[in-house]
Image 1: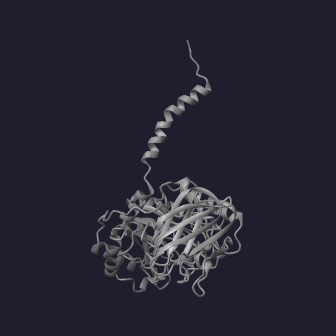
Image 2: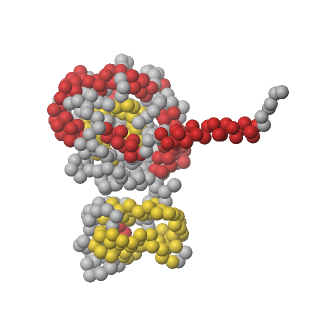
Amino acid sequence: MKTTLRPAVCRCLLTLVLLPLALAALAQQPSLHQLQQQFIDRRFGMFIHFNMPTFCNQDWPDPDAPADLFNPTQLDCRQWARAAKTAHMSYGCLTAKHHSGFCIWDTQTTDYNVMHSPLRRDVVREYADAFRAEGLAVYLYYSILDTHHRLRPHSIQPSHVQLIKDQLTELLTNYGPIGALIIDGWDAPWSRISYDDIPFEDIYRHIKSLQPDCLVMDLNAAKYPREALFYTDIKSYEQGAGQRISTSQNRLPALACLPLQSSWFWKTSFPTDRLKDPAELVRDNIEPYGDAYCTFILNVAPNRDGLMDANALAALKEIGRLWTRTGHVADLPETSAPIISSNLAKNRPTEGTWSDDYAIYDFANDDNFGTCWNANREVITPWWSVTLGRETPFNLVVITDRDADRLQRYRLEALCAGRWQTLFEGHAPTTERVKIHRFPTVWGSQVRLTVLESRGTTSIAEVGVYCERR
């Protein structure tokens, strides 16, 4: 006799079969800390700035430069990958889209792309295939600022946010595992596109939904304290812009970058220019940074033929002669989860006790970590508060002290339904500048900080209030 199972029974049996597999896969997924450890263990990689600026002799080309200007007649990504191997690099990172908005992959989001150029080849795919063939990890660079598509300050539209999500979906769906996405042109003084204009948490979670193991790295180190991960999984240091990592004090997963040539994109003088000294790069960057939880990424710019110049190839070979990758060198300290949500306290009305001179209350929530609210030394128990407006949910408060151990003991409170509720009271949880407090979500209209003990005058650089999606 033939037995026919009902659809509901079939679904139940299917669930019983698939659920253990799903749970096993989840258990095997590496933690963020493990991914960060893998990242710093890679030690040394190749940044590849190759895009429309290559053909304009400037890093910032005309945003309306025609697509047919992009024409690398001898493009060979295998040459790039093999050159990286000679230097004992372990990964590459290609500029899939730079600030002028030209896409060097087969995108459906815009006609301003490589498939509408004379090349008509997907450079991202060829790069990814070539680097994987050499056993190298694949990272991508993506610019939020996009002057061609008018995605720029004071011009952001909902369609721009959707464009970013659609382009990232393509890059994280069609090209295999992407170990890290290096994002630029966001929350920088020169880009002037804030994490509120383009919501950071929305983009961050979109990336993680597509590839949970993809590290999100925003090039934002200049603004934020070195003691915590603000809006990034990896702390970054652009050395050419004066950002320097402390090899003695750094405790965060980090990346430091520098171009081998005089600038990021290829210039007509590069074939005969003097490049950075390989011995100095090894001595001053690769070796010391690896011991300080920091990966070093060296930019090597391909020329207009799509090849690396002979002098760049020789420099990479010499680096490989002087240095050999040793892999794991240091156990990365555990650190708090990245702060990725919008700051509800930014530029909101503030109050407090008597301030010192001009350093009044609103210096503590002006989104500038270089300014401070200073309590007047005559005040025994100083306090500071911020009004969020109507009652709103939040579950994270971050206090950035002026100095590492100035703030000793304090109380954090929230005004909830007209009554003050204590969120924290006691000694500062860390001697680092940044004090991170996560707690169950509360609904409140104000947050108040009362300083119970301070080593010297109370001086607060920033207080941030956030509502994380958990």
